[in-house]
Length: 182
Image (tube, rainbow, N blue to C red; front, side, top):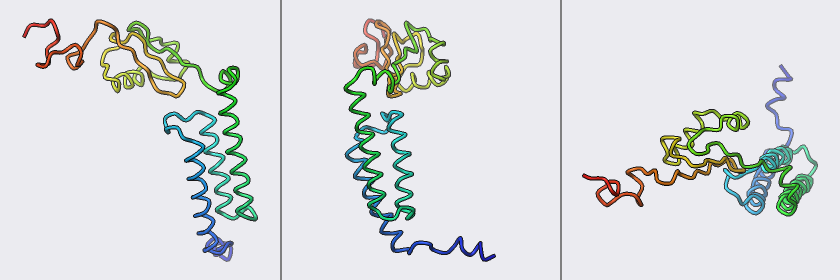
């Protein structure tokens, strides 16, 4: 029973936990503000790994497993420096880009789904169709090319000559296709 009671005791004074938590939280917010300026949807593998490592380092700093906050911030600064150095190297050297960045992959060409590429990306036809619908495309035949970009977003070029009643360029003000009779 005494062991169970020790789970509820503080090993670090509560005020110290509040100060540590607040200082580390502010440090992480500032770090992410200046280091990770991209949208969440554009995070790469190295950025996600960086976030996981930062979270682990911050947890140690907040829980008091390091002797001082300075220890935690040295580790946080080291991780931030590594992340910036990797981003710079990937930008500067093409071979690093090939190693650390996934290539863009064509998923649809001339209205035909490239199932081998879908399989390689572990994407189902249903997932692809959902992404196409998000782009306003209901029929894969309307797609000239659909490419899964490096950041995980889908780029879609519509087939020329195929239009929909909602396309503003191909509709008159009454909502009729140009060339259609009412």
